[in-house]
Image 1 (tube, one colour):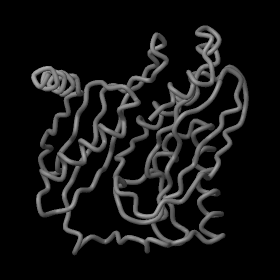
Image 2: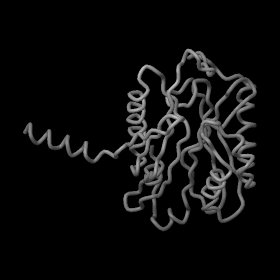
Image 3: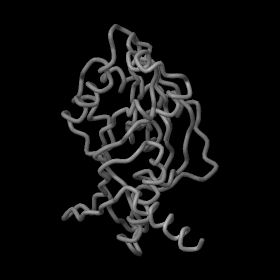
Length: 246
């Protein structure tokens, strides 16, 4: 029995997606994962965090640009993430210009209004195809270029078959999230696309409150689900939840 348990553990370990940590001269490191199911996302991020801490040693870890491709595995009703990369750097908290907000920090009405105005302006640029202006609203840590934003705009619109609106909804404020590039206050938005051709959306957009009245897009993880895919696969709400699963 003991040997069977050990064999099962070894098989599970072998099945875990490989994470490579590659040194990037002058910039730190990059984590690379070839492919994994979206349901493994949190576990992959946790493993990357552990590996990054080992590399940085006595220093603290800062996560920067990340990107990936995704596809829907219709046979399993699940999203597969491919070519995932995550930039990693090490820093000394004693000299870090970015300081955390108190654990009990609460957004003011002005903070909420400012974040909403900012996300609406960003989505207007995305909707209008203004990739350069959208890139300027991204956090420098994302290293977003005009070309990156053009790709995101194409992905955002790929299932649209008619006109509609992008409707952001503030879900929550986050204080000093551990996997953010910087400490501080963040607003997380989901976004509804009411365009014909879109059955629903997954993920969302995270906005960093740099300071009062100043915001940046810290993370863009917005994906849409094709209505044609839903119709073709006769997908249920549970199937859609699985596709969007994190």
